[in-house]
Amino acid sequence: MSGSTIIPWVVGNWKMNPIQSDATQLIQQLINLLAQSPIEANACHIGVAPTSIALDRTFQALNAAPRAIYTVAQDISRFAGMGAYTGEVSAELLVDSQIQYVLIGHSERRDLLGDSVEILKAKLHNALQAGMTVIYCVGESLEQREQGLAEQVVLQQICDIASVVNTEQWLKQIVIAYEPIWAIGTGKTASPQDAQAMHAKIREGLSQITAHGAQIALLYGGSVKPENAVELAACPDINGALVGGASLNAQSFYQIAQAFAQSKQ
Ligand code: PEP
Image (cartoon, rainbow, N blue to C red; front, side, top):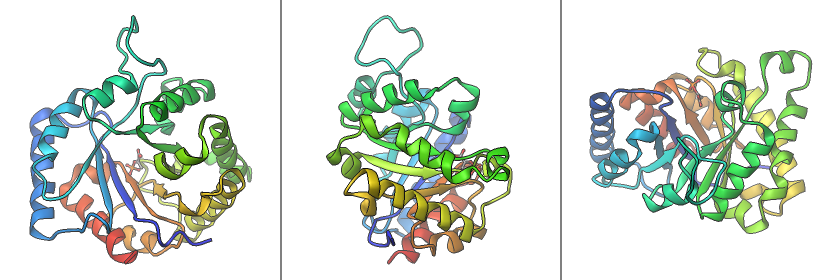
């Protein structure tokens, strides 16, 4: 089913980058580009996910933008509220700092930082309870794809969270990002056909879980750049992009947002 009525999302995941002065410059460049050639707010949601130390600064700087640019946390604590959890930042503390968006389930957190399904569910529950919008990441490894398990793995990752998301939250607080692990930071992108096929499967799977399956934004992530954004954006079930490397260049990131905004109008 086509998701073409969904407003696309283009979100930059800065990961553990960049230093403060470069981040300030990057934000200013993005603001300038959007001031020179505006992308209407209802044509594309735009967000950036800086490091946790830069969240507040980024939020303040983006307030000067001519349109909304969301500040997105890259992660959240599995523990709610406040308490003796050294090093952690809870959903409530993020919301208290006006951060309303968060990535959960990025493959780097699943594979390198020990985020198990149980931990991800706790994080998701806390974020949703605090009223945040979650970009929930799914994706298969190269090995799983080569074994013909890609669909099964991805659909299982969606099913994993079904018990912690209610009907209204699916509609208002969930965005899904499909990021094949073999395409993240490698320069290899899934072909638009393969990405669309997986997105269609995800939408089909979502529609079995929630009545809102057709309205949930499905982002693609994995070496998205201006050179492949137009083709990816043309796919009916690709409603945006989660962008790593290319989001560290304001011009590239802007062009990706422009590609999605234009193709979905
Ligand atoms: C990511 O880490 O979410 C990502 C998609 O990275 P890249 O665009 O660099 O592949």
